[in-house]
Length: 130
Image 1: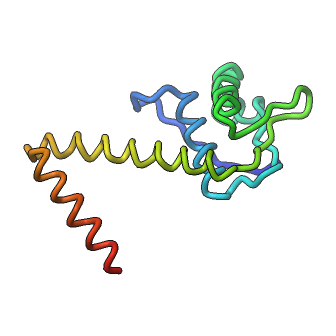
Image 2: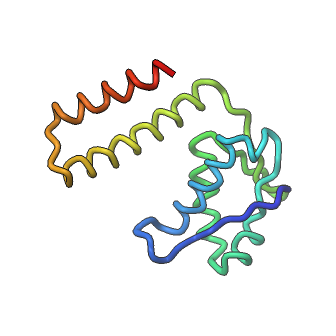
């Protein structure tokens, strides 16, 4: 089992289980948690964060549904191999989230869809030059 520092905030509009899920998923995608490694135990996470084991269990169950981990009865939760399709899908989800946030900010700045498209085109062009 790897030691992992999870941070939760009651001030966010994001449920605690989703915060835990997001941080563990990020650790898997970044390679901080490797294939076959045990995730922190439900009880350990619950105790350290002072939350219900059921909350942690929900986060782990969703990670398992999404193909990131496998819960093994009596042994713990282990990181699964990241296949290229799963990794690509998760990266596409991150792009979608970032674009949704960009759209939200663009609306606050009163940018038209055309202006936003142009800005994206300019940024893509700049990155291709590097």
